[in-house]
Image 1 (cartoon, helix red, strand yellow):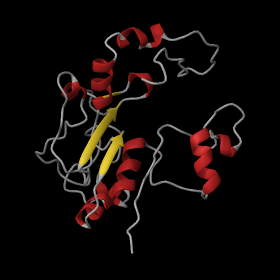
Image 2 (cartoon, rainbow, N blue to C red):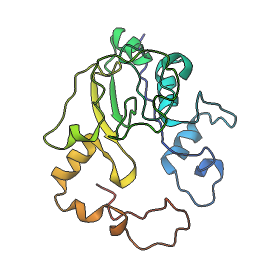
Image 3 (cartoon, rainbow, N blue to C red):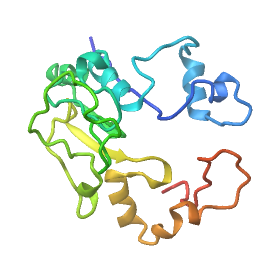
Image 4 (cartoon, rainbow, N blue to C red):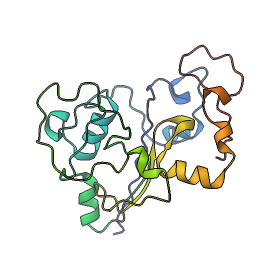
Length: 206
């Protein structure tokens, strides 16, 4: 019997009701709607944490933040944590992560509440800078794999048109003029009323 393939798609900072298939009157999510039409859409689903990094670590390990040790953004998932991707890899699967993993900090700033309470594990001396901005300033940065079980990693850090990581390296190489498209000062005119609303000048193909 042929073994199944597994594809997980995780959107970020995305409320469950901000979907076309959930009836949102403005937001267009055509590809997600197409998946929902062929599958099952849950209307009462709960996550381990409402915070990005702890929930991603719970998704990867199947454990609560109190167990895997990543309790707030800016913390990190210990490299010795066992993930479901590790198990797939050991079973002979080829594994890859494309996009945002956010299992390690991708900022140079320390978390605002670092040191405010006991952590699940003592810190170790491993390299936890794989998603940090400075790793992607020069030539392509390829960090050691497996990375939490992933044999191939195409990393994206940050958010929206200001995303970094391997994407930023590709963007700089492919669009030398691209700096003039980025930043709020270069956005296109709009009438958005939300504070974080930006109409980016970055073209869709970029």
